[in-house]
Image (cartoon, rainbow over the protein chains, first blue to last red):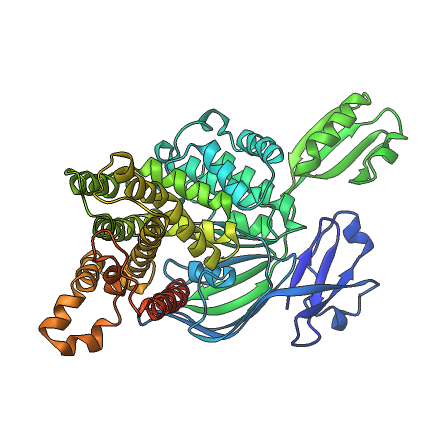
Length: 328
Length: 234
């Protein structure tokens, strides 16, 4: 069973056969388009709400009764699941439960001791839990060399490196040797090297380890930008990452998958109350939910990511902002 | 692949791990040609053995250059573990090229040889150095990039294999039973025995057979190494 979610659409995936191709049923409900995203039932046929459109999404990974032994210790046992293109999956579990081993199995670093694994050949970005300590290159040299290994062109890469360095606030360290950088900076470089690849699948092993709150938000934002076009699998202890990013959660304990479920991703909303002089303005803001409170007072429910944009439009049109608060 | 090789060479040079093997090799060559009138082929034979030791050393340091996490990142960036292995081998060959050039041209430039050089002599010397460096890469890879490399005594084991392969001929003379297990080691003397006669190539009857044996030995060994490497990295 797989799942894919875009911004204003909930997509549910129904597996029709054990082959690699899944049928993705795309459900578009009017109330969801207005911004009220809810999770679609995992069996949309039974729900009877499917309106139209079918797309085919490929299984990019499939494991059947996989067991992985390292030095006589079973790190993964009886693992059976598949991942479809475009999914975002969080793997959670306690320390030593097998999260990192599962990610390595998905990426092909580990091959199964028993069982069958099928992988589609694709460009994979990997962010290790701990970025290597002793890399001798400067950040810029390292990223440049790594991007070239992946076949990226020079000029484009340089622009991208500078752009990511700017986003992750490491521009001033670009010429500093990596081994002299802080743990957080190294972790950022680890994330950037994976993003530079423009991967089809990105594997992140506890990506928020060692990052401050601001950077964590930036990482989540960057991953969100990739979420619709890239398959993302991450291991994490941070609930924030699960809440904001991953509709599918695989829980691992003692090397076994103990649950594989879908959760609702609630996008954080801001409520903006404003006095609007011209009614035609409302037509400009049809992409946000609006409610008429009084003659000229309107309440907007705006995704946090869109708040600045909406506020700018309102202020430019001469509106007065009465209230701005986060929706609980 | 060329970018990966560039990454490896740059990383290796910055690590300064090339200093001890290169220094030892230079020392060996300088001492070997301290005196003039050296016999051509036996001198080249001695420098081939120096190349054997040095490339083993270089291979082991090149394969242990990265931490596990860095290696995993490179696997993903390259898109294949085998590409990583081939990239490492190519890097080792490029790193050891200047040593080959030095071993071949230093005695020529300093006029250290007794006899006069001819094209066949140079060709057989180049072949000998190349074959020995492949043997070195073989041993170095075996004890650093396979499960044997993870063992505590990998360096000691590599040295033991080198010593046994060099002394194989003497060991067989001592106890003929040794020939039943020494075939597993690099066939050093299959090469060297054609270079034992000072300034003349010994075109022994077995030259063709020996060349086939060496070629087969290298092909089978490198194929086995790919399997062992993939097994380790799984």
